Picture 1 (cartoon, rainbow, N blue to C red):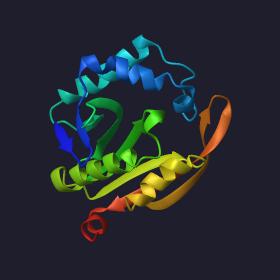
Picture 2: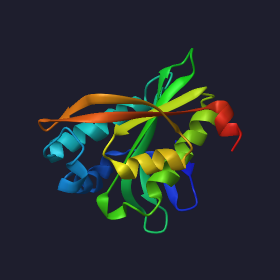
Picture 3: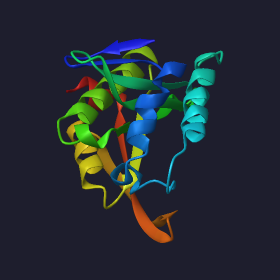
Amino acid sequence: MILETHRLLMRDFVETDLQAVFAYQSDPLYLHYNYWTQRTKNDVCEFIQMFINQQKEQPRTKFQLAIILKEENQLIGNCGIRVNDSEMREANIGYELNTQYWGQGYATEAAQAILKFGFEELRMHRIWSWCVSENVASIRVLEKIRMRREGHLREKELIKGRWYDNFLYAILDREWKAK
């Protein structure tokens, strides 16, 4: 499974991705909006193995892909789509990046590619996502890929002893085609 953009290659995870994923998931800035307070190599190994196991499912409904910078051949994060309901043709997307690559358009580029895959290859009708309401960078990504804010869930997430609101976003296939 490979998706390609102007600057990125998005591919299935392999076991040798451990060190690159561990490097960015150990960053305190990355961990800010996560439930985890720290990550061990074993945690990250299980994380990657979950994605490798999903690759073998038939039919495959979860596509979490490593984001690779083409020029440097460097893993900088991951982006994925998960089919929630095949009959209703609904899926959700998510992404995460190494903090060294924030603010450079990579998350937007990867999310755009995963939306395209979801609508054109998986034939989804509706694709949604969510983010913590204070995560301005993630809000920008979702809005740049033309998702609409559909909801505001108050105090939805308890992260490290603090309640956070969530925003829900979605885009429909006809909105995607109208771009």
